[in-house]
Amino acid sequence: MRTNRLTASILATAMLGGLAGCDTGPKGQPKGAKVTLPKTLTPSETEAIDAAHLAIAQRDINDGLAFLLAARNDEGGWGFDPKVSDPALASMALKALLQHPDYDAATPVVTRALEILVGLQRPDGGFTATGGGNENYCTSVAVMAFVATKDPKYKPHLSRAIKFLRGQQILAGTKTPGTDTQPGRTIAENDPFAGGVSYGRHGRPDLSNVGMWMEALHEAGVEGDDPAMQRALAFVKRLQNRTEGTEGQVFVVAGSGDDGFIYAVRREGDRFVGESKADADDRGLRSYGSMTYIGFKSMLYANVARNDPRVRGAYEWIRKYWRLDSNPNMPEAMSKHGLFYYYHVFAKALRVWGQDVIPDARDIPHNWRHELIDVLHRQKGPDGSWVNPAHRWFEDNPTLVTCYAVLALQEAMRK
Image (tube, rainbow, N blue to C red; front, side, top):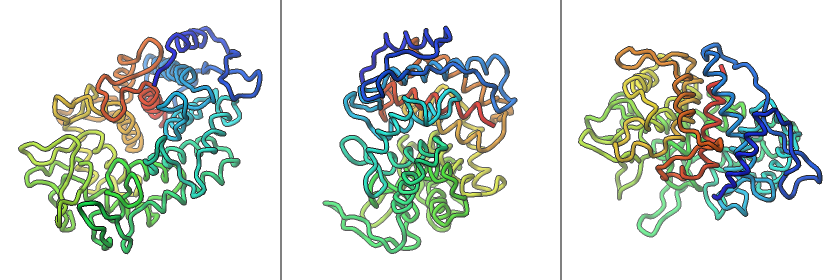
C-alpha cells in the first residue's frame, strides 16, 4: 500500500503542536468535516509503567494514529489496495482509534469508516477480505471493532457477526470439503479438527485462526465456559508441544515436548501430523513465540486454571525463550517473521496473565510493558509508522504493522 509520508509528517507535527483539527478530510465525509488529531495524554491504568515510559508510549500511540489517519483511502477507509477498503484492515485501524480517548463512534472520521465497514458486511453476518476468503479473520476483527464502539447502534451488526463466527467452528457430525487429492470426511468427536476454525468453511483449522476467533468472542463478552469456547480449547490443547496429558493425540515428534505451541495439525493420507511455520529441526516440531502466546492466552480465555500443568508449562516456555528482538525460537533466518504480530499477541497474553514483571529462566526480572514500549519506540519510523523489513505475512505493509504496534501499546497501557 502506498502512503503519503509527507502528509503523515505534517499531521504528526500539527498534533504535537496541539492543533485540534484540519479541513483535509477524505472524500466521502460530510462537507466541512474536520479530522481530529489525537492529542489527549491520559494516565495509564496500570502503575507498572514509570513516567518516562508512559510519555514514550503516549507519544508513539499518537504518532501511529496520525499515520493511520493519513493512510486512509479516498472514501475514508483502509485497504491493502489503496482504492478498496478491506474489512480486516479497517477494523484494526478503527479499534486503535476507538481505544484512544479523543475518538468515539460519533467522531466524523470514525463514523465514516464504520459506515464503510457496515456496508461490507454480508447478509450472513460475515466479512470477506478484498478479493475473497479469510472470512474468519475479517469477521473476528470486525467484531472487535463493533465492540470498541460501545454504541448500541452497532449491536445488530455485532450480533450477526458473532452468529456467523459461531457457525465457522468445526463440529462433530459435520463434513469437511474434499480436495483434488483427498475426499471429504465426517468429523468424529475425537477428530483432530474438531473445535477448530479455519480460513474458510471447514478447511484445515489452525491456531492463528482459532486464537483470533476466541479473542473476538472473549471481547464480545462470551464466557470461557461457553460450550463453543470449550470446544475451541480442546483444539488448542492438541497443538501444545506436550507429551503428557494429550488424551492419546500426540502430533509432535518425540523429544519436542517443550510445552510451547505449534501452528496446526494437518492430514497426510490417513494420518495426522503437526505443522509448524517455524520449520522442524532435530528436536522435532519447533514451538515458536507468536503461537505460544496465542495458545497461552486462549487457555486463559477458556478458564483454564493458572496452576494447570498446561498453563504452567506454557508460562515456563515464555520464561525460557524470553526476548523481544525476534519472534522467539524461530530459526535465525526467519527470526523477524511475524515480529509485530508477535508483539500484538505478547501484549494481549501478558496483560490477561496479570503479572507485571516476568522472571526469565535465569530469574532476571523483566517489566514486559517497559521492554515492549522500548522495542517499539526504537523501530518507529519518522512518519509515525512501523514496518517489518521481513515481509512475510504482509508485515511489509505499514498500515497493518502500525495497527499491530498501536494495539500492542494500548494493551500495555491497561491493567
